Image (tube, rainbow, N blue to C red; front, top):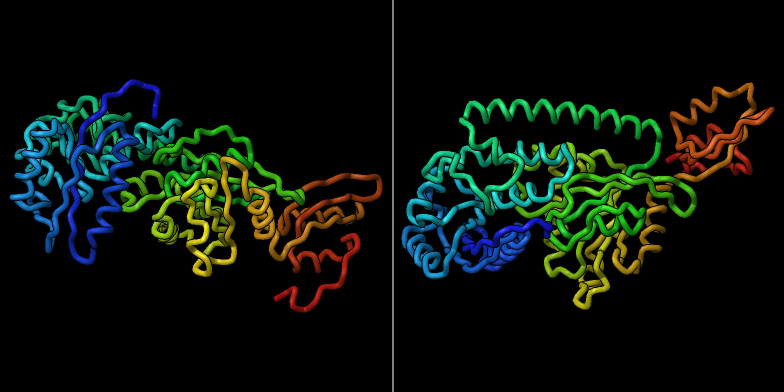
Length: 431
């Protein structure tokens, strides 16, 4: 929790059971909504669900259930009602007309609030503000008064607060300005990515559900010193650190923003540059919380989100974290999971050596580290190596250049006359 002093809001959580949903799945989603609320500084006082054939277009829930919610809020001093489904501006207005002084927000607005709370870098704050303006601004008219009603509390904080007090034309101008600023930052990020690509150093992204321990793992491996807290969305801004595998191969490790059920489209769009760290990675470490009974579902959500981002199908290492906890489900998955699986505790260090070994095997799959002796008169060969291999070290001598590089089977065959102790490859090395 941030050190800043904030008031806690008593809240009512509201969910609906429709279509193919089950009461169990909705309650699981509400459990997660409770944790989101706690992260934002609130307290879940009431939980209300209703089974419907389809959502009520005017108020999401039925008229009778809305009346029940009114009395529950009144009797329990509830200040805010958080709906687990997305609400339209008219639905917010209609619900608030019944609930009176109780503020009404939906799941997306709550997540935006948490993002506003945790964004640290300039780019992160701009991304949050853009997402808030795109999603929240039209819904704020649902409060029944002007935007200037905004004050403190859940669902209203963030870098966009003062901006939202302006009229709609100003909001549109602000959105345009933010998009331009973020596009400029994205060009800078693309330049950095291009530089990394030219270096040939393998890129590994740590992905997974929020609060799986991604930042803790990066800190364990690289002493990155980044914030690692037991809360949802503690990390929003990507952090990249260099890590050297036991055999000497350097890689770039990136901690990414966590995924969650019903990840809002506005966040995916606004945080595109952050989420795309997974798209540009060569290998993914999919981190899951082994102590969470919802691990399997969380893995499925992560895999689905990766596919939607265009990062599906990459080489992946499945890592189950928090195995030091007594309720860790280390045996739950068995043969259902791929072969690249390892169980660890990023806090205690348990299983880290195994993780690093499996990661190295994945990075070097089909590759080998070789020492090449290139005569000075054939120095052009070094340029070919920079293009087609990972060059780790170069030493210039009086008669020759000594190069340490990671080569695949094809390049190893092409460079065989320069490779020390080269053995003729088998035909299947080229398949």
